[in-house]
Amino acid sequence: MSTPISEVHDARQQQPTGEAGTQQIIVQKFGGSSVSDAEGVKRVAKRVVDAQSAGNAVVVVVSAMGDTTDELLDLAAQVTDSAPAREMDMLLSAGERISMALLAMAINKLGASAQSFTGSQAGMITDGIHGKARIIDVDPHRIRTALGKGHIAIVAGFQGMSRATNEITTLGRGGSDTTAVALAAALEASVCEIYTDVDGIYTADPRVVPAAQKIDTISSEEMLELAASGAKILHLRCVEYARRFGVPLHVRSSFSQHEGTWVIPSADDKITTQEGVALEQPIISGVAHDRSEAKVTVVGVPDIPGKAAAIFEVIAAAHSNIDMIVQNVSTQGRNKTDISFTLPIVEGAEALAALHAAQDLIGFESIDYNEQIGKLSLIGAGMRSHPGVSATFFKALSDAGININMISTSEIRISVVTHADLLDEAVRVIHKAFDLDSDSEATVYGGTGR
Ligand code: ADP
Ligand code: ASP
Ligand code: MG
Image (cartoon, rainbow, N blue to C red; front, side, top):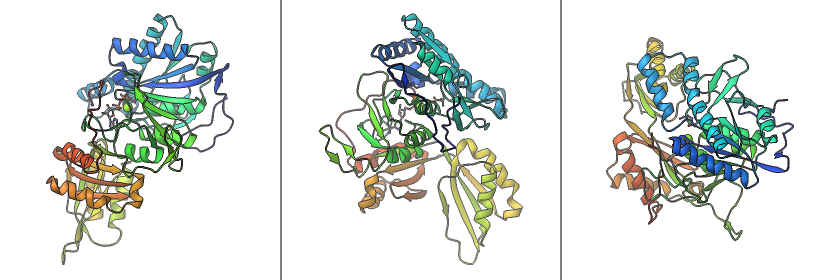
């Protein structure tokens, strides 16, 4: 019987048991930098076997080795500039299959027993949208059977299968985190451990801000904002999924034994100290940055009702996800305005083609397209009750001579777009302005940051 747990349906009916015999199930996910070469695979194998020896039933989700996914994308681009989405998923899903089999071999070599499973064998059922499929069902009966026989189950992350099309799908970049949480929810695991190349979630990306501080606990609300603002330490959908199903998430390094960061399910839950004393939320939880977006400016749009709607209908029909939007004040007497917005660079070409096709209908003059931008976001639930945050934020950027192209805010976030070349400096300036800098340097154990 399948387990009705999905990203798109809220129904959580009969759950499978969280015990394999009398054991707790734990799910461990290892990212690409943790398994970047044979030595990495062996190191991870040892860690997994140790977790089993400690008395757990262990399910492992593994990503493609190192920068394999990027290398496969580069390869495809050398072959064609219009790869069919189906073939792209066949190609990219191969990356995770390599690491799952190698990890299973390494574990068997250590004397424990492991079996690897593709996403589809592990029961990751998705819709049929190639490249950004959503999980609609998780049916991990083969994983439960493997655990019942005392095996360690290794699952290829980032992939699934559509029952509607019978095709292999992928979940979108960084999607192995979501595979891990979905399995943890379906198996009622006691914890989902996300192993990566830094010691946990920091107040900023430690590759950009060496003085970033490790956060011990963060609410899922703040982690959602960080992930949505580009902090790629966790896949956004994994955080949403974990919150919805109450999966405890522990983000930590596969290169050290240090305790990492716990993502706690709700902002309402009090963050407690080790002595059990409830603390106020910190004002600021961190700074995120994002280089994956481009800015589109539609120039000379007739300043009459319905034109913004027409533009965004065209963009929506091209399946683009718009982020920030700014409409300039229309120039006196000209009755024209400019509308700017940001969207993922990977969706840029399709959106531009759709807009150009609708130029006569909408009546705009031209389009500017700029990929040399970066977005910086300051996030903190405590911002709600601290009015001085915006003033400090904008003063710090102005003192550093950093020009702002766009601004957007939410209750717990301020985001700005700057020139791409100024982004790293802007992140460091804001981190310092909010007293987030620590005296010690954060350790980055591996990875290329690609
Ligand atoms: P994995 O291959 O393990 O999935 P990722 O590269 O996807 O690893 O994510 C880990 C990286 O996320 C870190 O190496 C770091 O550069 C980056 N990162 C971005 N924001 C943060 C943050 N706030 N805290 C920690 N790491 C961050
Ligand atoms: N290998 C995929 C990627 O690089 C999925 C993942 O690592 O989570 O995006
Ligand atoms: Mg990742």
